[in-house]
Image (cartoon, rainbow, N blue to C red):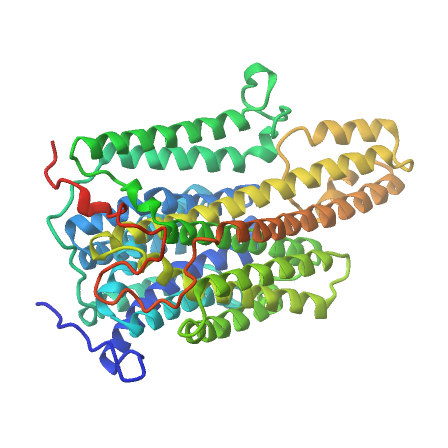
Length: 568
């Protein structure tokens, strides 16, 4: 049974009552997809305790979740083109619910990684590209702009509300209840799919480029793996590297291998297109300046957001000793301002160009990261911390309210799933890079600062200094200073030296976390350089399936409309 198209335009450009039901279903899906990532970040210390593991292991599991989505998102979008967007959405939601259920009962870190990082990641990779196409297929004109702004705002709200919701559930009950609840919400979304009409792809269905999917996933995985392991293996100078090619750490070689595989992927796609076969990615689409600028902005936004959301809970929980609920409460300002600014941003989009709003967002985020870095002290400056988190929410809200419409308005109806796949690939690759890169920088900074401080501390004997230097050459994790004290006491170190070691470690913690936030500020400032291709005119939402592009978004990027649907 085909659901009739909803009435998507009232006189004021807002979705009609029937379309509102459609938007609620799609927005609930977006909220669900991003909620547990935020929950995991705020529950790091409890996860470490429950599974008797380390922060580094949990960091890897969080990164793997984002990486799974990033690696498979374009493939998920292509599958939606082949079997239908609504069907791909439904299958993905079933897989996501299975993953959430397994995560809720996980009894070990491998099970946690399989349920959350793998199954939920695969489910999300099917759902999210179809979600982007379904929004475009169910709304037209100004209502589409409102719908994309709402989806962006809900995504931000999910990331922001996750800390306080997850903190409360984790502290009062267990983090497992969040994932059990996701199963219930997912089933409710599946039961409501009758409200969402399909968004058929014009023309014949494409064929799946299996080798292209393997190459793109492998390339991204190698790049992120190299960055994730940098603090353990060493960036250039080998530390705990499994092999030492030419005397260097394995890190640059793994990253270079990933870049090489991605280069090979680009060549393979060009070869398929030239022979008339369907590629996984129509790179001609990336000639559209508007699309390219939107994707880079998505990448930068999520790199910063997830980097900050990794650093801040470490500070609040492992330095200040707050529990998950207290951490969520401290992060509440970003929840409120991000949601409110997303709503305001959707209204401003009718009068102000996306380029202006996105650039303003990155400027505000830069200021937020700088303010937050200044609060990394032994005693929290509540006022400054709240200001920094509020500014972060404002900047993120301004950006989130614009980019979905920017990306989807740059392509025609036939390319929406592919553009959606690119969009969510950029977002999730940014998320995985944020956790992996910022996490590696924090851990590397912690080790280096600690070693330098210990070596320069006259209160610590040369024997203990040498022992510390040797100890940090192996795998290191971000731990509470009480754990360092306990380890030093168990090693038989004198009380005076124990106090000195702990003092040096606590100082190293603060400087490492501050560095992570400063890097986030630099990324935000650098992102401004890549926003030149964003629209300088108000977008109407690409009403009838034609791309709404400005100069530079020429018709040489017609994407899948250029491909021969017959597989050779």
